[in-house]
Length: 221
Image 1 (tube, rainbow, N blue to C red):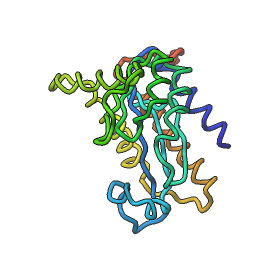
Image 2: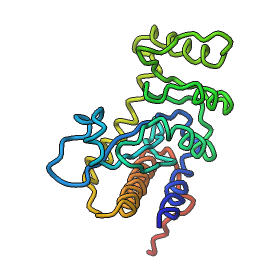
Image 3: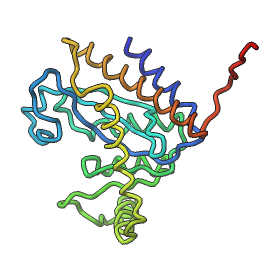
C-alpha cells in the first residue's frame, strides 16, 4: 500500500506544479498513544522521541501542498531526509527557493541545491563556520542568509513558518495521534493523512481560482 499512497501524493500535487516555486522543508512527530506530551515539548529528548513517529515533508509556501513525504522512526535526524525530499519534489516542481532551519545545515545540502539551481535559505547554527576557504557554494549560501537578515519584514527566511503551518493543518484536522499498532501501519496511516491534506489544498486552490480542473459539471435541465 505504501508505494501507492506515495504515488497518489505526487499525483495530487502535480495539479499545482505551475503555481508553486517556493518551498519549505521540516519534520515533526506524531504520538503513538494518548497521554504523551506534545511533540514540541520533547523534540530534543532522543529517548522520549522513541515513542513518536517522525514525519518529514516539503511543502509549498502558497498552497501548503505536499509533493513528497517520508515517515521515519521518531529518533531519526531530520538532515537524513533533506536530499530525498528535495530530489523527489524537484521532479514535479520547478523549485526556485527553499527554506529550512539549522537542522538541515550541511555542505552536501548546499551543493545539492546549487546543482538544481535552487536558492537555499538555511539558518546557520551558533557553532557554524560562516566562511570556508575554497568553498564558494557554502560561502554564497551563508552570505545569502546573512543578507536576508537585514531585510526586516521582507525577509525570505520567515516563509519557513509555512511548513509549521502545514503541520498544524494536518494535526488539527486529522489528530496528532496514530492508531495503528505496527510501524508499517503507522506509515500508511500518516501517508493517508497527507493524501487527504493534499485534497483539501486542491479544493481551496480551486475555490480561490488558482487552478481549474480539466472537466466541467453538466447539469441536466
